[in-house]
Length: 506
Image 1 (tube, rainbow, N blue to C red):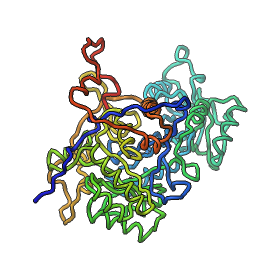
Image 2: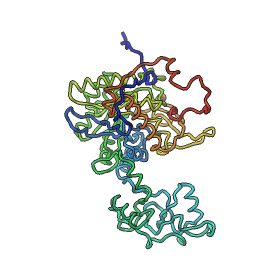
Image 3: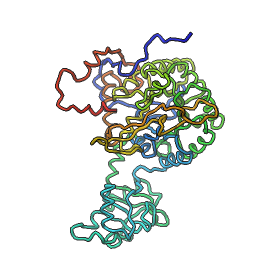
Image 4: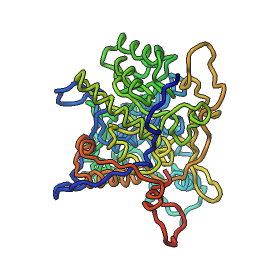
C-alpha cells in the first residue's frame, strides 16, 4: 500500500513570521548575511566556501551566464553557469568570469580611424558611452591608435562625414598603463593625471581594457564582493550525470569554484555515481552540490553519497510544470522544513554540516526570509534574476510594457534532456516539463537586490537576529488561514494605482 504523509504539502505563502524581541543594537546595518555554501565539520573555524549574501542564480540558459555571474558576485552572491551548452562554451564562460578584473572594462563600443562622426554618434546612442577607444581594426583588443570622448567633437560645428582619425585624441597624447597594472595603481594614475579614463595596453600596444574614474567609488561601495583567494570573482557551474567525465575537468581547468548537478530529481544512483567519480578523481578539492530532493530520505541519500550542499525543490519553479505533467513534487515550505530537520539530525550524528539550498517557490521577497527561517542556508532564484539587465535573455516590448524572455530548462525551447534524464539510451525529452514565458523587466540587478536584502535584514531584526543561524534559532512561524492572507494585503480601500506592487511581481 502506498505511503501517505499526514501533513499537507504547504507553500511559503501559507506561513508568516511572528516578531520577537528586537534589542536596541539589532538594526539592519549590523546584520550579517554570510552563510556557508559547502559542507564543513563541527569545530572548524571557517567554512571552505561562504556566500556574502544567501542568493544564487539558477542553472538556466535564461538566467546565468558570465555577465550575470560577475554582477551577482559583485553583490556577494554566486551564479551557476548553465550547463545546457557545449563543454567548451560553458568552460569559456567560467574562464571569462575568473579572468574578469573588477574595474577593468573591456570596451564594447570601439572605433577604427576610417569611421565617421555619424558612426560615433550612432554608437553612443546604442551603447550610451561617451568614451570610445580607436584601434587599428576597430576591435576591443586591437592596436591602440587613439581615443574619442565628447571633448573631441562638437556636432554643431562639424560635418557628420568627418573621419575619426581627424578629430580623435591620438595615441601619443594619451596616458596609458601596462597590462600588469593593479586596480589601485590604475586609480592612482587616474587621480595623478586628472583623467576620466585610463587605457591598459600590452607590450605590443594592443588595448587590453579601460579603467574609469567613475568606477572607483563603485568598486569601493561593494564590500560584499565574493572573491577567491586570488581576488577573482567566484563562480559556479552546472553539470549533468551524463558527460561529467569530460565536462568537469574542463570546468575545473577554467577555474570553477563549485559545481552543481543540474537535475529535476536528485534521489538517484546517477547522482551518486557522479559524486563518486568526483571524489575518486579530485578528492575533496572539487566542491559539488546535488539535488533536487524534497524529503529526509532524499537528503540522507545525497549526504551519504558525499554532496557538498543539497538543493531542495521539485515542481515549485514559476516555469516548471513537473507537478502538472507527472504528479511529482512537494510544497516548497514543507520540503524545506523536513530537509532542514534531516540536515540538523545528520549534523548531530556525524558532526558534518551540509548546507541546503531552497530552489523554487519564491514568489515574493519575504519568501526568501521564510525559506531561511525554515532552515535553508541560501536560496536559488531563476525568475527573480531573469528580470534584470544582466540576464542573457532578450528584452522585448509586449503590449506596451518591457519584458524579458524566460524559459524553463524542460521547455521545448531549451530541450535540456540531460536535466530530466532517467537513464537508458534514449536521449530526448518526450514531453515538456517547463514553459516558455515572459517576466516584467525590472532594471539593474544591483538596485533590485539592495531592496530585497534590506527587506531581509529588516525582517531578521524584527525577529531579534543579527545572523542567519540566529534567525533560524529565534524564528517563530505560524500557519495562516485563507482569510488572513486576504487581510495581509491591501483591502477595503480603493487603490490609486492599480498596477501591482513592484516586489510582488517576482
